[in-house]
Length: 388
Image 1 (cartoon, helix red, strand yellow):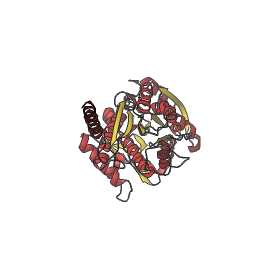
Image 2: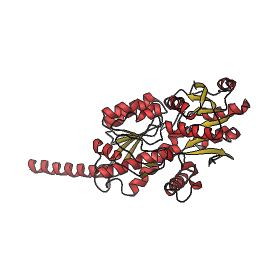
Image 3: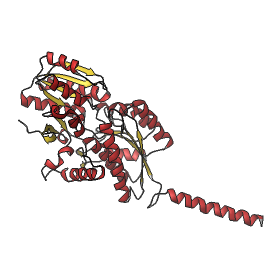
Image 4: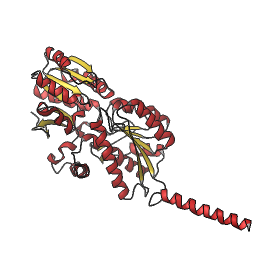
């Protein structure tokens, strides 16, 4: 009797265990594929990180409703770094060591991405960064990729436009962050190649609330234009301070300006700002022949329907990381880190939000200069810049 009772108890435990396992198994077979995400949902980079987080959740919902990846559902584990590199490091360790995620998307900022880069390499965890500093993927590291365009492309587009406008002498200001310092370095590197003289180049505190003193100094240098490279609310402050000081110079911003909230924050001072970025924010203005238009219009429409706000380029970066990762896992038929990294390197002609990606062993960004357009703020909205 005792033996029979033990057998019944064992059978009951086995059935209960099976039911519990099934409750957490993904529909279609197999455990969920865990993907970690580190975004600056709050903090000074929230205009970037918040739309990334919203987009990531929207995309994962769509992927899961469509059957997941290889029949497995995706479990997105989001961490809000608040723009802190220290928090990003802590979260990356948790995602790699405790959650054992298949990959990490993000972080939002260049400083955070550079801070966790080595952790991902050591932990053999693919990283698809949403940030743009060239040093994230240069030199190339096996598991590290990024979807934002290279800083040098942005700098060169600005200089090409300055050449068209006859601008030769400029002032450069940038926030003292990984993003700001990286962009400032690229502007300085390519200036001579385009016949541009940088009369003054200064960094400012990313948390600055008034840049009048710095801009007065820039104005005194006799420049024809000002380039600001940042992602913080300071972008709007620069525009407003220049207007208050009655500075006549043309203001150029980096691609960090590609969120309509910055325009709204700057108000009338934003009018006429020129900046380069991807095509999402002017998707409806693109010709039907553009290979990205259909995708961009759909993403923009879906995002607005879900969140009652306009999509931004930064949310688009999260879109690209997830669909690139999906394509790579399906091509590799595995979540093995080495196979996924190899599959990303083999991905060619992949149409995404940021452009048409073609990765290689020597290029872990996959975008070319033609993925970018020059934009201008016109009547409080983004518009394609009409080349002179």
